[in-house]
Length: 342
Image (cartoon, rainbow, N blue to C red):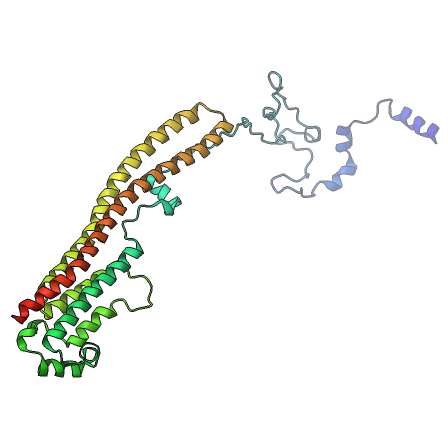
């Protein structure tokens, strides 16, 4: 069989047919009108195109492209330069970047108070101080009402007169109380209702009294004592209210000064830490960040300690005033009873 093949090759010529001759053969004509897979390509029909001056050999042989070799030795980690080839992928060269440490954001004084709410400066009273003030005010009201009752209507029952029904209280007032004993133009309701309003501002068992409740209690007591014509104790309650209203204003003024000083110290600390951070490595920056927060907390603690000194001083003034009220209540009531009796 091998001898027959060699005999045929000797008859056709010693050189085998090329790919161009194979493509232009008659046997390939049956594939002329097959559509390509890509819609942008032309069909294989009409292999010999006379108008464009192309032959089947031009279609079959791949075009020769010029390849550009990269200049110099390639750098590790960076893609090679783009090759000039229609089939080559598009390469994008990206320089390697080293991540930098995120800069530490300096918090303002407001941000620190939002982060540490227990460090805030509170312009408020201690609950024990407000509860004591409530007891003193009620003592003044009860003492003045009891002494007035013993002077003007000693034969009546105190509980029925001040704590009973409004109709019975009004009837007893009209029947037994002289006109000069009360200020009728301020009598919007019965004496029992006025007295009951004072005790209903903060009912028993409702917890600590709040600052607005204490001020409302004093207003009710002032109205009650005005009706009973106990002007000395009425004035004392009015001064107490003014003192309680002025103290938060004074504390706010102290707070502004302390906040201003804390901001100055905080700005100095931030500037020092910023200069130290710029000249430090990343591990040192992390350690410096924790130290920075500790120093910030020390500034807040110092501001809170300074403010507590002023707040305690104001509360001492309130306690001294309440002691004076207790001492002067008996004396004022006795003098009032003597004056009215004459």
